[in-house]
Amino acid sequence: MTFTTTAFWGFLMIKRTTIVLAISFLAGSAGTSFAQTIGFADAIDQLAISCGADINKYCKNEGLGGGRVRQCLLRNQASIAPRCKASIAALTELLQKRAAARAAVPRVCDADIKRLCAGVQAGDGNLMECFYKAKRNVSPACQQAVADAGYEVELAPSSAPGPINLSSAQLVNTLQGVEAPATPISAAQLRQLAAQSLTDPSRTERVNRPPLFAQLDQLAQFTIAIQFDFNSARIRPDSFRAVGLMADALNHPYLQGYRFLIVGNTDAKGSREYNLKLSQQRADAIRAALIDPFGISPSRIEAVGLGEEQLLNPGKPDAAENRRVQLINIGR
Image 1 (cartoon, helix red, strand yellow):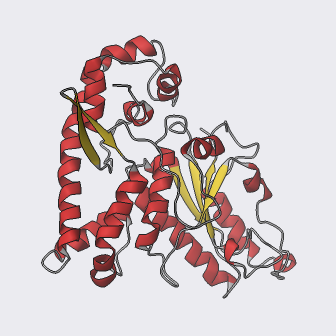
Image 2 (tube, rainbow, N blue to C red):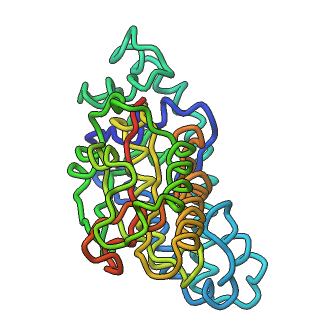
Image 3 (tube, rainbow, N blue to C red):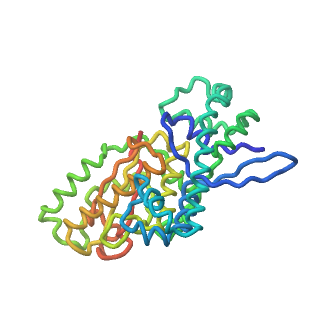
């Protein structure tokens, strides 16, 4: 069996327990079984498809972050569709089995780790990249442990409508390669600039308003359309996959050592104050979902809403393309 390294090397640097959403199928070949798994994007999409109607019926006020959608479905399990029940049960069982297998990986693969990247220190964001770039086979025992743990996950391209539809290679290439912005950037700094912008007389006119922070557009990033309920920060089930795609990217070995901004943007319909508040709530909702259920470390992601202050199409402030989420690499 050929070893696919992507998610395995990501695991080696995580010092906390994470939940990997994966759905597997087994195939036999000459008496040998092996597992193939899919990533966050496909796994959460499966749940959204199976439970979408029940989510909209019983959990329409619950957000994806914090595991609240799953908790709501469990509270209403007497009423939800059999297909939804089966999806929840299968995913729960799989995660439990995966967790047991993951606990064994560091012990089983210890010799391979030391052999492939001796001298690389854990914790600095370079160990996973070393393993991934080595592109060498590990021992059969380690191969099996990794397969059982579900770490042979490849990134899934986005199939949702939006400004981009990247392959896994394009997605990672788009986000990597940044050491540090020339000017340090933080969510707190951007929130302060956005608040000051509301009282700046030179920014009163909406048409062709200059960007709030031009340097943002010069950083490695990708933009994706995520659908929310009207005037709400609740992520719609048909956009669960888009958030899963972001999680898949953040878990890639080449990106594990970096920090990111989640930037929410609106069009210019409504008041600037309201748009700023709503965009912050939506960015916060995406960050919450990336942390739980997707297990991204809170220290790696900050959320900020810029409302209509950083329009993609400043000549048409009300245009739909201005409603977007940016995932921006801000360095190590």
